Length: 204
Ligand code: MN3
Image (cartoon, rainbow, N blue to C red; front, side):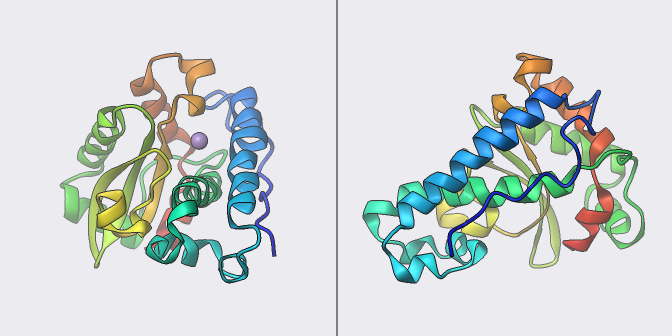
């Protein structure tokens, strides 16, 4: 079964004014679609890889043949990361997490404000394109960042970090440039208004 582009779980203008409709449209309909199409192209004709669910594929890149490992890493990662990202965002969301996740964040980082500052720093500090993540690494919450479309599920040897993503924010310029231009820090501050903490809590 070929991989498919999932629909956005809300209208493209739903995250305004924090993330504008045109950015969402181009990001989902063109960038995410290209990752899906290029992943399907990369694995075409390899029955074993074609049969693998997306997450299993990116968790085990070592088993992907050398000649297509790069495209599977980039496009499989891109497909997983964006499918995850759309669900982590929501209209009428934001605020601070409560319950188990809220408690775990306070325990790990001191306060929600301290967590936010550290997460923003991870996003700002990622040179070039990549992602900032909150992960559970064997039950311990950590903030990490990955380059390009790498993902903590790919493991330390490939992604430079590991753990189960609870929250991820895209810091590629295509995620913010139309509205925020070069001001990645402003985008990262605005994103807090549309974080779907209920969804993040489900990942814990
Ligand atoms: Mn993106």
